[in-house]
Length: 287
Image (cartoon, rainbow, N blue to C red; front, side):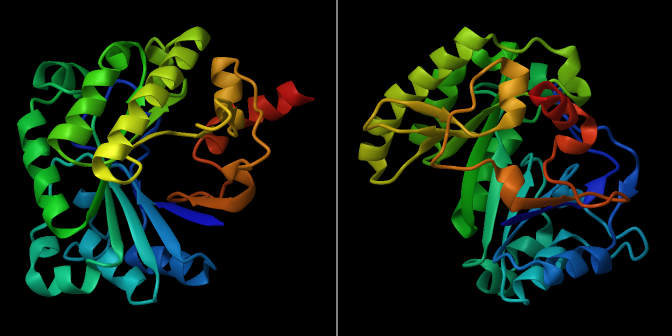
């Protein structure tokens, strides 16, 4: 089971043109976040946003994301937090906080492109160099990984993104696909055949990266890439529906069966996409 908490749905300081969120102005209180984490049987709690590092408790503004992470870690749990990398709270770099969190916090930074020009085109902000600098700071202090959602705009940049992540930044990266929800409805997705090409590209890049760093470095979202059989197994109904791909994995069941997704002002859901309509369509199509 995985527990994911979307702690703020009010804003983000980037304007990514394919963002799946529909911002409604709601933010969870620290009390509500910790209640969800406390009641969860899971060892790892995932924190998402809006931009998580800009979190402030709606009632007590001095309470920030560091209080959220510390509160969860002090329950004996680990935290995985997603961020766009544009901002690092000062407290997160205090020696006392680092010592307490270092073995219990993983930071995932979104990396949309391998260069400043394309990054600005996608996010509408000229902060590529700042993000690169902050990624290095996160890496110095915490377990850090990268993620990248692919659509038409950055599809041709995949090899460069992988090279930049693995060889320049020295960090693992997980690629996934943009979904046609939220602003993702307004951008051009890659085609079904291009998804297969993308998977083949990642399959070709991954072994060398792994041999170079002595650990897996390149991943692809909901797919289990089996290097022994050469098979590609999809375990995500949302990907199945959006990209007309078969759902074939028996080895790795859909996360919908093993997760709870919490967002401000809404009951717990089974998937980030469920409450926005995509998963309902999957169920109807299956009938």
